[in-house]
Image (tube, rainbow, N blue to C red; front, side):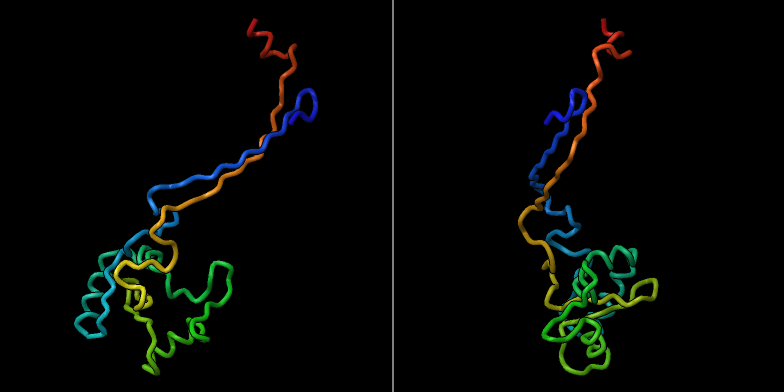
Length: 152
Protein backbone atom coordinates (compact mmCIF):
# COMPACT_ATOMS: atom_id res chain seq x y z
CA UNK A 1 0.00 0.00 0.00
CA UNK A 2 1.50 3.34 -1.05
CA UNK A 3 1.50 5.82 1.84
CA UNK A 4 3.33 8.65 0.11
CA UNK A 5 5.42 8.99 -3.06
CA UNK A 6 8.39 7.56 -1.18
CA UNK A 7 6.83 5.24 1.44
CA UNK A 8 5.21 1.85 0.93
CA UNK A 9 3.71 -0.29 3.67
CA UNK A 10 3.37 -4.04 3.31
CA UNK A 11 2.06 -6.96 5.38
CA UNK A 12 2.51 -10.65 4.83
CA UNK A 13 1.35 -13.78 6.59
CA UNK A 14 2.36 -17.35 5.91
CA UNK A 15 1.30 -20.76 7.17
CA UNK A 16 4.14 -23.27 7.41
CA UNK A 17 4.21 -27.02 7.93
CA UNK A 18 7.36 -28.47 9.44
CA UNK A 19 7.58 -32.15 8.55
CA UNK A 20 9.85 -33.13 11.46
CA UNK A 21 7.60 -32.80 14.59
CA UNK A 22 10.54 -31.50 16.64
CA UNK A 23 9.93 -27.76 16.31
CA UNK A 24 8.69 -27.52 19.91
CA UNK A 25 11.33 -30.03 21.09
CA UNK A 26 8.69 -32.71 21.56
CA UNK A 27 8.64 -35.67 19.26
CA UNK A 28 7.65 -39.27 19.51
CA UNK A 29 10.04 -40.38 22.29
CA UNK A 30 11.59 -39.05 25.46
CA UNK A 31 15.30 -38.82 26.12
CA UNK A 32 15.10 -41.48 28.83
CA UNK A 33 13.18 -44.73 28.86
CA UNK A 34 10.74 -44.39 31.75
CA UNK A 35 10.20 -47.67 33.48
CA UNK A 36 6.69 -48.60 34.53
CA UNK A 37 7.69 -50.83 37.41
CA UNK A 38 8.01 -49.36 40.90
CA UNK A 39 10.63 -51.92 41.93
CA UNK A 40 13.95 -50.90 43.45
CA UNK A 41 15.77 -52.57 40.54
CA UNK A 42 13.89 -50.42 38.00
CA UNK A 43 14.46 -47.27 40.09
CA UNK A 44 18.21 -48.01 40.16
CA UNK A 45 18.23 -48.59 36.41
CA UNK A 46 16.42 -45.27 35.84
CA UNK A 47 18.95 -43.43 38.02
CA UNK A 48 21.85 -45.00 36.10
CA UNK A 49 20.31 -43.94 32.77
CA UNK A 50 19.67 -40.43 34.09
CA UNK A 51 23.31 -40.03 35.13
CA UNK A 52 24.36 -40.27 31.45
CA UNK A 53 22.64 -37.00 30.52
CA UNK A 54 22.89 -33.35 31.43
CA UNK A 55 20.22 -32.60 34.09
CA UNK A 56 18.84 -29.66 32.09
CA UNK A 57 18.34 -31.89 29.03
CA UNK A 58 16.34 -34.33 31.12
CA UNK A 59 14.19 -31.63 32.70
CA UNK A 60 13.34 -30.31 29.24
CA UNK A 61 12.80 -33.76 27.70
CA UNK A 62 9.73 -34.54 29.83
CA UNK A 63 7.96 -31.59 31.37
CA UNK A 64 4.79 -33.50 32.24
CA UNK A 65 5.15 -32.87 35.99
CA UNK A 66 5.80 -29.13 35.89
CA UNK A 67 3.83 -27.38 38.62
CA UNK A 68 2.87 -24.35 36.50
CA UNK A 69 1.72 -24.01 32.92
CA UNK A 70 3.30 -21.68 30.38
CA UNK A 71 1.12 -18.81 31.66
CA UNK A 72 2.28 -19.21 35.27
CA UNK A 73 -0.96 -20.81 36.49
CA UNK A 74 -0.95 -23.84 38.78
CA UNK A 75 -1.72 -27.11 37.00
CA UNK A 76 -4.42 -29.34 38.48
CA UNK A 77 -5.01 -33.04 37.98
CA UNK A 78 -8.10 -34.61 39.55
CA UNK A 79 -8.58 -31.50 41.71
CA UNK A 80 -5.06 -31.53 43.14
CA UNK A 81 -2.07 -29.39 42.23
CA UNK A 82 1.09 -31.06 40.95
CA UNK A 83 2.82 -29.98 44.20
CA UNK A 84 0.15 -31.79 46.24
CA UNK A 85 0.57 -34.92 44.11
CA UNK A 86 4.36 -34.80 44.62
CA UNK A 87 3.86 -34.52 48.38
CA UNK A 88 1.44 -37.47 48.32
CA UNK A 89 3.96 -39.55 46.37
CA UNK A 90 6.83 -38.71 48.74
CA UNK A 91 4.71 -39.64 51.76
CA UNK A 92 3.30 -42.74 50.00
CA UNK A 93 -0.17 -41.41 50.75
CA UNK A 94 -2.57 -42.56 48.10
CA UNK A 95 -1.76 -43.73 44.61
CA UNK A 96 -0.47 -41.12 42.19
CA UNK A 97 0.88 -41.49 38.68
CA UNK A 98 3.99 -39.48 39.56
CA UNK A 99 7.45 -41.00 39.68
CA UNK A 100 10.81 -39.39 40.36
CA UNK A 101 14.53 -40.00 40.39
CA UNK A 102 17.59 -38.03 41.46
CA UNK A 103 19.63 -36.35 38.73
CA UNK A 104 23.41 -35.97 38.70
CA UNK A 105 23.13 -32.42 40.10
CA UNK A 106 21.17 -33.75 43.10
CA UNK A 107 17.80 -32.37 42.03
CA UNK A 108 14.62 -34.42 41.80
CA UNK A 109 13.25 -35.25 38.36
CA UNK A 110 9.50 -35.86 38.34
CA UNK A 111 7.41 -37.38 35.55
CA UNK A 112 4.00 -38.95 35.13
CA UNK A 113 3.95 -42.73 34.96
CA UNK A 114 1.00 -42.66 32.55
CA UNK A 115 3.14 -40.73 30.05
CA UNK A 116 5.91 -43.30 29.76
CA UNK A 117 7.26 -45.23 26.83
CA UNK A 118 7.43 -42.30 24.43
CA UNK A 119 3.96 -40.87 24.90
CA UNK A 120 4.06 -37.10 24.59
CA UNK A 121 2.30 -34.87 27.16
CA UNK A 122 2.09 -32.07 24.60
CA UNK A 123 2.23 -32.11 20.87
CA UNK A 124 1.29 -35.25 19.03
CA UNK A 125 2.10 -37.43 16.07
CA UNK A 126 1.13 -34.78 13.50
CA UNK A 127 3.82 -32.50 12.06
CA UNK A 128 4.33 -29.11 13.71
CA UNK A 129 2.61 -26.10 12.18
CA UNK A 130 3.38 -22.43 12.62
CA UNK A 131 2.40 -19.03 11.28
CA UNK A 132 4.80 -16.24 10.33
CA UNK A 133 3.83 -12.64 9.79
CA UNK A 134 5.66 -9.41 9.05
CA UNK A 135 5.12 -5.72 8.44
CA UNK A 136 7.35 -4.01 5.88
CA UNK A 137 8.00 -0.32 5.52
CA UNK A 138 9.78 0.56 2.27
CA UNK A 139 11.48 3.84 1.51
CA UNK A 140 11.66 4.55 -2.22
CA UNK A 141 14.69 6.59 -3.23
CA UNK A 142 13.97 9.65 -5.33
CA UNK A 143 15.12 9.63 -8.96
CA UNK A 144 17.78 12.26 -8.33
CA UNK A 145 19.38 10.39 -5.39
CA UNK A 146 23.09 9.55 -5.31
CA UNK A 147 22.44 5.85 -5.90
CA UNK A 148 20.26 6.46 -8.94
CA UNK A 149 22.90 8.83 -10.40
CA UNK A 150 25.54 6.07 -10.26
CA UNK A 151 23.38 3.69 -12.30
CA UNK A 152 23.38 5.96 -15.36
